[in-house]
Amino acid sequence: MGTVPSAEELSLDIISNLHSLSEKVFQAELSEALSMAAQNNIAAIPASMRDAPTALTRGDTAMAVNYRSLVNNAMRSTKYAEFGRLIAGGVIDDSYESGAEILRLTRLMANTAVRRASDGVIDFDTIPDAKVWTYVSNRADAKMQAALRKFNELQIKGLKRANEAITTWWYAYGRTAQVPNNKKVEARNAILGRLVRQQLAYLTAAESRRTRWIGTHGGAR
Image 1 (cartoon, one colour):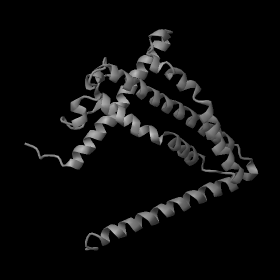
Image 2 (cartoon, one colour):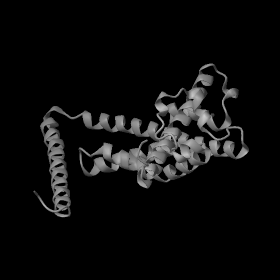
Image 3 (tube, helix red, strand yellow):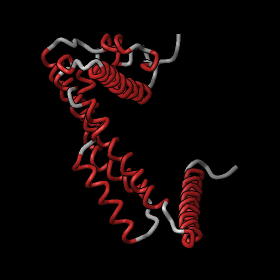
Image 4 (tube, one colour):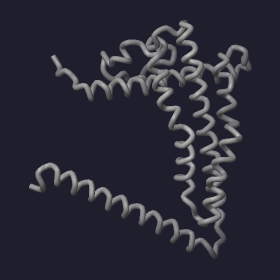
């Protein structure tokens, strides 16, 4: 017989299952919607997934304006802005509240085996899309359908954010990549200097963490 998992280990298994299930459920929903769209059978796509195919190609105008503004404002103050970090920050600001709600909805939809991690961590990557519904309590239940609609709505917003983030990244890259020949050395030195400073700061912080950890565990031996 194996050892009984601690409360912390069990909690991590449950969170892992819910996280993986949320990804797999939306993957199944998206695959089906894209298949129906490819067949020009839009009427067969569930209402909550109707916007999914266009979310992958059109994104969201308000998000596009916001992310480009972040990049443009930064480039007015410094020629070689850290646009990747800025865009990532914009995505986080727009999405961090959705994560908790998606987790809550996934827990509501999940069956007992997922919520209690009675079988440990489930490898949803190996489970066919059609079979994922066996891990949902009752797909036909009215409350479950309402949860799934809200779940899909939040996930589609995530698709739009991802679309606009990638589009903005290429927009920013295009602006910074077109450096005149007489400015290329300046650009290279500015970017390399920033990377070196960041790495030194990271190493300093890591050393500080090691020192604190050793100090609280009896010192170096």
